[in-house]
Length: 422
Image 1 (cartoon, helix red, strand yellow):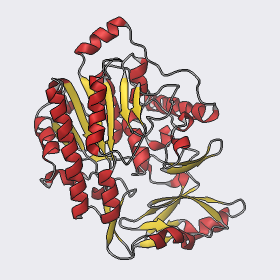
Image 2: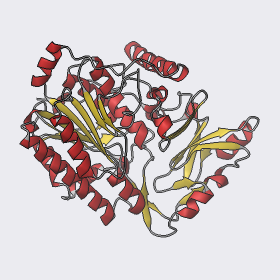
Image 3: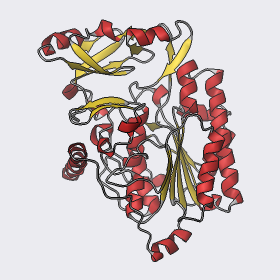
Image 4: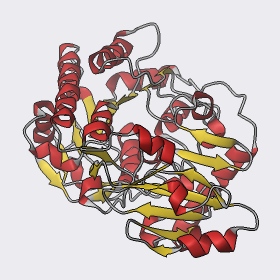
């Protein structure tokens, strides 16, 4: 208990310092001593790939031959449980820090901070502001240790966190096709004008987009999986041609799954609470509500407790298994939608199709529909093993072990993924 408390205290202190201080002015760390460069030539590469919103059960549908190959030649988990809330930015940052969203500070895709203002994933200035991002992501630890890194649009990779960015990086651009992303990653490996990256991260959002628009049981969702799987096949072929495949530890994850949402199952947020009484900080599935001054009792009386489509709590009374609610960026009231329901502003709801099926995430991470993928193949991993389910905070300690660098304070279990290793 004492060691856990110390780790969490360190993580929270780092977050508060990041929120209160101006952006660090120190340059990106690129320490590459000659002896480090020599050891890098022998060190296996580490390549971390995210397929946003790929459900764990889709691996058994026979539509992703390259992912199946990786699982066959390496290890896969029955599933990986995302952190609460089961949203893109919080979970991508958890994967690379080992911290729960409540501890690293990216508590939602949309959030407010009393000093920094408003964060939205569509706001490039906020996304690129390192003060939002607490903890120490894996690329910062690697760069500090003299290991060059590269990132293709991994959330957090655009920001100077502790004054450090990946040596090579590409900001998110949805117009860049999956194969073109693979080409850029391979190009980074080919470029001899700078030290070869020892850690690379790569992000694909196409499965998430198809899932939101058409639902996880749709042909469009399956086709998006096939498209990304083909790009991963291209990556494997490219690594093999370069003699790099068998010296690369390659890990494929997803941030969360995807649930089916009937179009008519929408709660209008203005019907949940009056905008004169409260600010709706975030909507969708994990709904954050901040009562306006003097309206606290009225808003709590209206919201707290169970409702037919959702449940609401004070932030301090959220289910303990979610490890959520202590961060100042979490609004005073959190309402969790039941699976298959959305909460949207009236104007946004009117823009959505009124019939048919679509998809969403952000639901209770314990639901089967929210289960995420973990596959790993390479010289460090066993062959043909299936791992028991684990939490996604456990990925970060594995990454630090593979890179041979010290782990920053985190919430993961360093023993959890030892069964994956040779």
